[in-house]
Length: 513
Image (cartoon, rainbow, N blue to C red):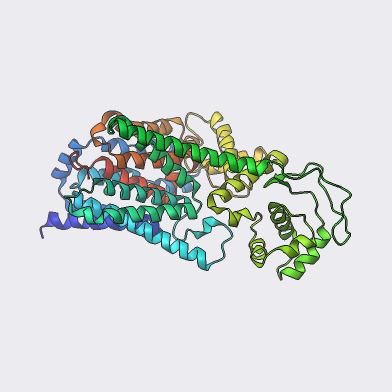
């Protein structure tokens, strides 16, 4: 093996390791890029690197983002946090340079990289599912064992994209034909996990990608008959999804209860209490027909768990979700499974009976109802994000040009939440804006934000021959996730961006597989 062959194989092995690490290991995500950089330096073929750099000079535009973002260092005061942040973002500078100056991967090597990523993600799905079955989880987010559930959802989305891509390009004369339906089965398993884990962001991103791809096929590829079929199926799916959401929303808020009889008594002769303006959940008034005395007594007969304020609120909501009055007779009518659900703090029977899609919608609707009635936003991640966006914008209005300085942004946001007496002030400090564009604007001003937008658009305008379905799906996934998350501020998000973007965009133009 020649020196060049050794370094190229090490480069391939390091990239495969990094692809496996992204969904499974924070430690390897930190180690693999360091080893890849050492291998790149040890190649010592600077003339070849300069030649490749001239051929793929656009890669420097992506590497330059690191330097543009560094504008935020000009007036920072939090040098400790700023130094840590800039060190963590070094892959933005180094990864594009390493990729465009190294020998490009061949088709077979790309399949090894993408296949390793898919198999690692699939392994993570099985592990997470098994973990959820063998442990009591307070929240479905806790089932993601290796990395946080949102970023793992992005890995699942991209794995589905890779599987569909290789399923599509396999032909009857291709030796990969034997793997074609394996790709399809894996993509179905990944989709099943995405739904089971209630990763709503991942599901929505996949839907957007699917619709865009179908529109592309209709416009550019299909004959008239196929266009009609694809268009009809897409329209029916959109109508079905919209109709389902509308039905769930109507069923949730449509009141099924008759006018309350405030003189009514329980079967044991005890009076009920009624709220003046009770909230509606599952079509029933939560605060009506409540006998707290009987609930406490009956709960002690059905469960060994302590009857405290949380248990009381959970029990009342659970009974309400079944359309029952909140008294001892209702508690005694519950099944043992219902009791376990309440002990696990499932406050709505449909959280465990109605499927993950309905649960996600019900939780969102309940959060919105709490906000409308009490101004509470802690029960809805969507409303918390809106609150963070509002607070971020208030700070940005005063520091729109250069931001507050890298390392200062999270402190500035926490102070703004305190100043406006936000319900989430001080409860989850330092978590950022939950929007990548606002986070960068807050830290370093408008210039890095505009430059990031330029990088998202530039390849579609000036590098059209390099744009593939997989790259489109990747950049769409990253963009949509950045709208609701600090994707590039988290290690997994950074590694997704710096690993796959340069490989997908700067592969040889003739290398479309």
